[in-house]
Length: 183
Image (cartoon, rainbow, N blue to C red; front, side, top):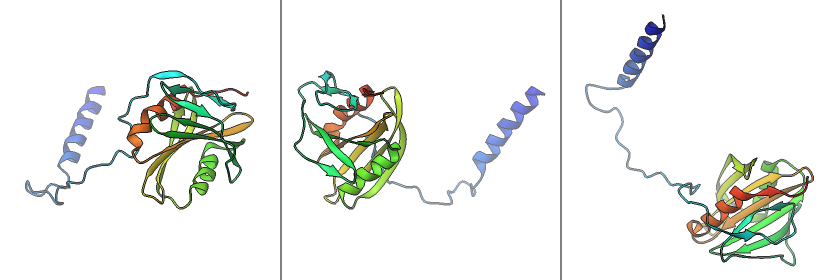
């Protein structure tokens, strides 16, 4: 019985592979479009230079040579700018009341002004779960942000710049090493 099931699967694959063929000619022209890696998944995280020094409900490692500062002001739709990290590019950390990560990202994006091509995905953030978005801002610059929630607050870590590939390793280091501090 098991052998017949295996043969049936092979036959199905073989028949499905032939579907749509018209005597050796393709029914649709070949495409030459190149897929754009909007997630920059090809990048590797930067080497750690130590923990970020801002007081926040989260902690993460900064890239070697990066510096963190606490900004004087910054607020957007219930999120407060808690930290700016400058290295190869710039990252910002926004915190707010506890909410779902997607809701925190939506608040962040509302403060960015009109954005185009927003794409969301569930993602690992440190040892937990979160949501990530990539988008294009009004200057035509691709940005990327991830959000996660502690029991008391939410945090959004965002990176944008003229060349996201430059800041991507620092962003990925923050994403990979993020740890909730308040529990």
